[in-house]
Length: 249
Image 1 (cartoon, rainbow, N blue to C red):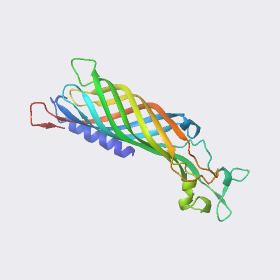
Image 2: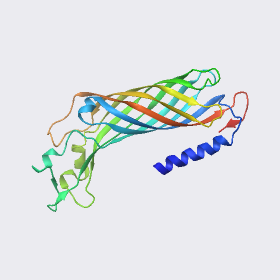
Image 3: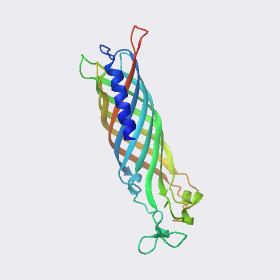
Image 4: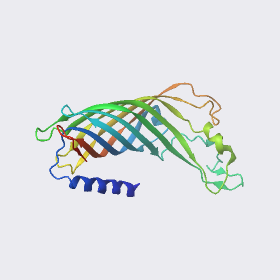
C-alpha cells in the first residue's frame, strides 16, 4: 500500500509540473485518496475501539459556484475488538484449543465499509484562488461492520470453521449519513491539492445474522452507530478548461 501511495503521488506530481501556467479553472473531475483515524460512538463504542479508514472518492466540481457532487467508498479496519465473541470457546487461561489439542492463535479484528454519494461546496477564502477554502459536504449511503475472525494458518478449529463464523461475526449494516467540514486547497499552479478536516458518520444499522452462536439468541434491536475523526486526502484534479476544448490533467 505504501508503494502504491508513493507511486500515485510521484505520477500526479509529474503530470502537474509538466503543465506550467495551467490554472484551476473550469469544471473539474477530482480523484481523492484519503486516510482517516476514527473513534466510535453510541452503540458502536461497546463493540469496537478506534479504527483506521482508507477512502477513495470521485467528484465533479462545477465551474464557478464550486459545488461538489461525488461518489465515495471507504474501507474500515482496526484491531481493537471489545466484544469477545469467542469467550465460550476459551479455557480458564483464555486460550482456544485447536482440533489437534494444541493452542490456536485466533485473532479478532474489525472490518467494515461505507459507500455512498455526497454533495458539497467550497467556500473561498481568497479572491486570488476561489478554488480553495472551507469545504463542507453531506453524504448518504450504506455503513457495514463486522468482527473478522482471523484463523490460525497452521491449526484447525472446527467451531469457527467455514460458515460457523457467521454465527459469531455480528454482521450489521444499514443506512448512514456523513458530514465533513475542513479546508481544501486546489492550487492555481496545480502542484498541491488536498483537503483535511473533521468527519462524522451516523449509521442506523441492524444485525443481519439469524442467530448468534455464542449468546444463543437473535439480535433484533435497532443500532445507532457513530464514527467521528479526522480525514486527510490527496487530490488529483482533471480540469476541463472554461471556454476551451482543451482538457488539463
